[in-house]
Image 1 (cartoon, one colour):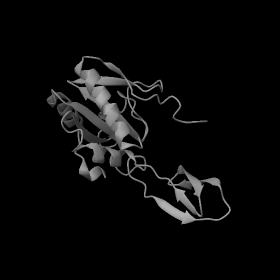
Image 2: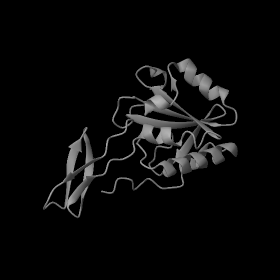
Image 3: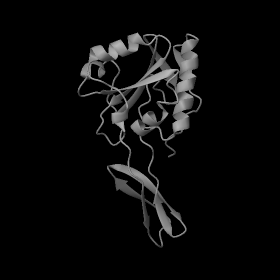
Length: 181
């Protein structure tokens, strides 16, 4: 779904996008268009009898399969670009979304420590807005969010905090227990 969102192809274009917006939040997804974390994974369903719960490797990610009657549903998640493309129209009055390929534009890789497959960062009036998600890394979101409304809530919270002049905003949800061990 990355073809639906504007791409920035140079460091200068990224800087200009951040500088040009005076009233809206600038959301930049650093990553690769071809990465599975950025792309949408297609939902699968199949029938198996006698299994209750197991894991299967699909595109090098674990997908949890749960037993429901006689059908086994593989729950795939909305991946980052799918979520971004679907909420872009909803948040257009207070935020703009850009995509940056970290191989094509390596200028920010060291500065922002862009080593993850997908990284979301927020900027407002030429200032990086940090968000406390409970993970210890307040600079960025470095995992794919599954839910559109969850992402909209984060963007609204960041926008409201940034408008008030805050450089660090507390997320509406605590992600410290995202991985339930």
